[in-house]
Image 1 (cartoon, rainbow, N blue to C red):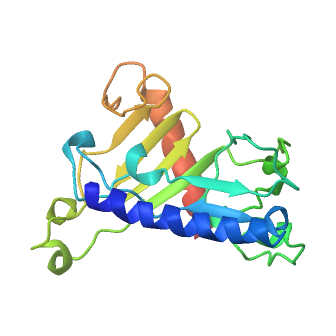
Image 2: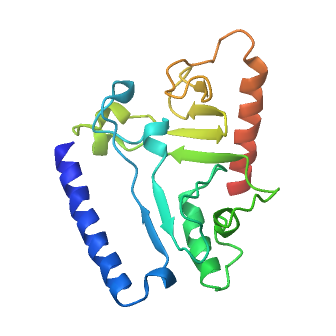
Length: 209
């Protein structure tokens, strides 16, 4: 953990130098600055470490901060579901460049301006394909063997459907159980919720086929 924090400190220092230079040359407010990251490792959550392939919140959520005062009011936060694939169309949109309709993702510019589009996504698809045994067999990540999955996440719920494991699927209410500690599958009264999440997962997979 300390090694990773020291690595991040060097990034902090480098970004600081870039921002200082932009400010000194009068270009800071005309520059879109985006800070984001790869997926983080678990540090003991769910009994996991040295791993980031699973569909729990600590792994699938990544930080993203954008500074561009000509468009974004300082302190703005976005509640609707966003994805890393939204970054490319966002930068094209802000730069007034044409967005290829085949490009995945949507521009975040309306959300950054404080608008709330009526047709914004209500769920997201998260996928991971099982790694081959020869890749994971001798590594610290061998616990992820055969752990491929297809997952749908809405603003409140998450359903994880494992592709290689039987009877291991997971369903969580992120509002009442934000740390994903209680699997709702098999709990009385959750049958219709599970079926709805399965249908939504099938719809998202059909869209990407």
